[in-house]
Length: 244
Ligand code: GLP
Image 1 (cartoon, protein in one colour):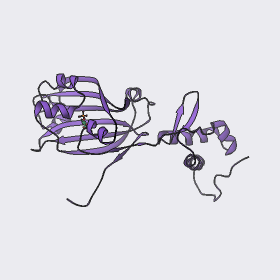
Image 2: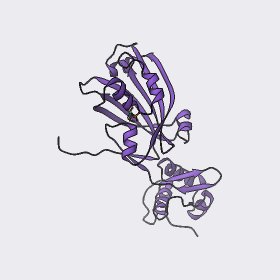
Image 3: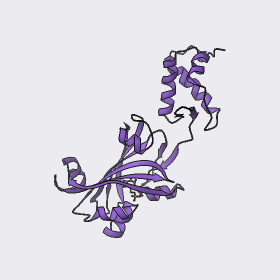
Image 4: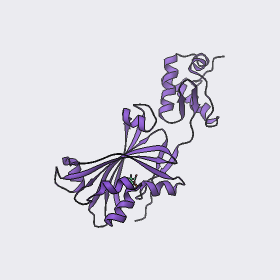
């Protein structure tokens, strides 16, 4: 039987009609339910395989469906709500009921580019530490974070970070400082092959990139960091209020 997925005759691309139809179907199914195959949908919706594939791919990218190689396409689990606070990854995870862990991917001392130097209020080419870490919640890779901090301000930071899971804990315990304010930006990007491998997704899949520029109580910059999260798995939650 062929289903009429555009009874009102709306002027929309065919793939979008297929996508709307699939979204309605997803709403009636439990996470983990199998959705019909491309072949079945092609026949049922009287359309081409390319059209069906485009609708399915968008829904995978948006985190509504997941593809399992050689098995099929399933309704995705709900996304994880991740609060945007001034606190550390470790504290954010704990507040949301998860346990955080860290894998140090790379830690080097290098010369600051003009941009990084301006962010950290140091001279261009001054020494900075670049620390790249994989952040995990309950053992699942969640984000890749690349942080820059001034080497003159935080001498010996790399050896401390090698022994600790939380950077903010090291800043408090060893350097007696804490980020108390930050500017945070959110933008989209496509996963590079490396990020895709680390975060267990496909190259080119949508990522959410957080940029945080943090400052201590005296207004001195502490850290400039980019964090790459899987865009299909997380929703960032910022609480806004009109009070001061
Ligand atoms: C968050 C911030 C990062 C910060 C990190 C510190 O993820 N976005 O800018 O570096 O927290 O977390 P932790 O102390 O757990 O290493």
